[in-house]
Length: 331
Picture 1 (cartoon, one colour):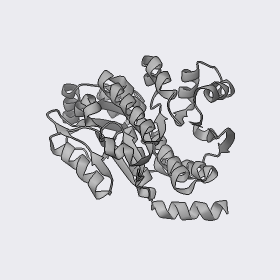
Picture 2: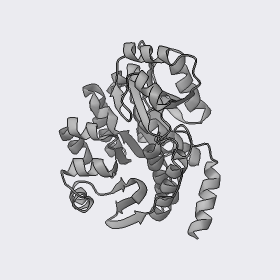
Picture 3: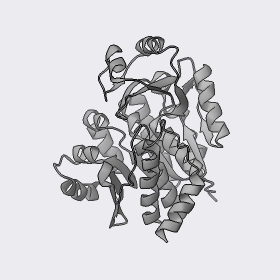
Picture 4: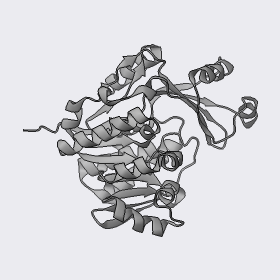
């Protein structure tokens, strides 16, 4: 008998997030354009870190799917994660944080620097990001633990893994394993550049999944449409279930052929780091643990509003209190 004792098993990048608050002038002095997200090599990343030396910063283990898995776990779900880190202090920090959070992790340490994401946050809460993938760029089929997927009820895949041929192979291998072991599959599109640069691979993967997460721009790009109604119609022919986040307009979901609309919860935005990741983690918790689509959507909206009202992708509020508050509110 196939025991399903892992609610959600993730596959994604292993990055250590380093968050700094900077002024508009400082961002300009660093030669960076506000709001851009750049992939850089380790040499350029080291130069930027040297320029930021002596400044206070927040550090936490990250990567898009990792943020989702951690959020899911902190709400009370059982989870596991696959990634690759370097054999260095950042890599040990990464693995230790997952262990402390009680998340099963398969993160081989290889002879490459651990990936880092430098997040520069300006007073308007906009993020400017420099990402050096380092070790996680080498993620492949050999880094997947089939037993984790065999034991999982759901598998969560990160769209950023389409950006390298080796990690794309691993993603499709995970899909194959999930289908073999009757685990449902969810995928986050991660970013528009993933769709535009790897369109065919993304479309092929979507044929095999159960639930797609995307934002409005990603939905329009994927479906090659000009408005959200057209995108919804096209998505229903591509994937059985999907959720589209719409920023201040809330979100919409099409689950089991029924459409749902969820409001955005008002908040004062300070830092948008991890908002989409938190949304997916909270939604999956409501879906998997509660079996309640309405609760899942409201929990996702409320939690993502809380995450943008603070610095960093790790929600500082008590997750159980958020659940209790929302249950009372919906009743």
